[in-house]
Amino acid sequence: MVRIVTLIIAVAAQILSTNSVCADVATSPKMEMQTTVNEIVRIAAIYPDESQKAERRAKLREVINPKFNFSEMAKRSLGANWNDISIEEQQDFTTVFSELLARTYLSKIETVKPGMVKVESESVELSRASVKTSVISKGDTFPIEYRLSFQDGRWQVYDVVIENIGLVANYRNEFSGIIRKSKFSGLMEKLRAKVG
Image 1 (cartoon, rainbow, N blue to C red):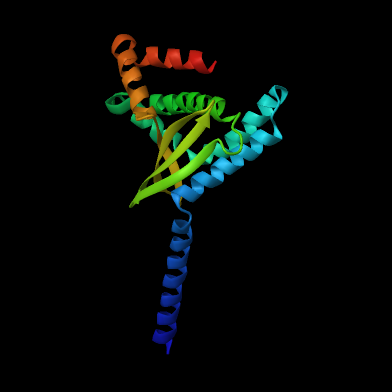
Image 2: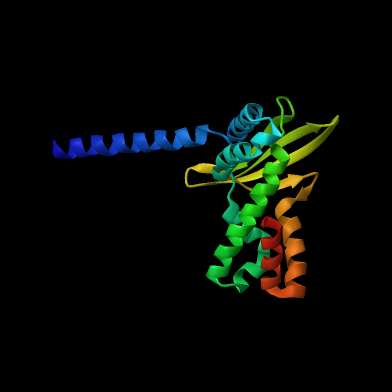
């Protein structure tokens, strides 16, 4: 009898854990992206004035922070140089670079209006995904691809490809050139100057 009860408990635990995993997977990268876009549009509509810029950006930051894997983006943007710096320097770089990325992204999305962003398709392979979107601005349409990874029970963006140019690769090329000329300390000096 004890063995039967133990077996029932084990099966029930397995079913519950399977349902939990399915619930996580049920939120597809495309659905995550659409939800994020909807929230960004909603916030931009609530705080449309220039006088509300600080509040608008703070609210948008709350939305995008958990959606972007800034640590992974920082690591990838340094490429091989990441392993040449200390853990403290890695943490410092991640903090400053994340702030730069967030500010840059916020400046691009804070004036978004309904219908400007269309979430089109997704491609998922194990824990990696790609979500293709298009942005309509001033009569032109620009393709933007978000590359995501599934970690800690959620999808997070680790790269953004705009018109076939990857954000991370673009930064990696720029940063490598700066490091060659001015070492890592020179790169940090430039980044700190940009974020103020």
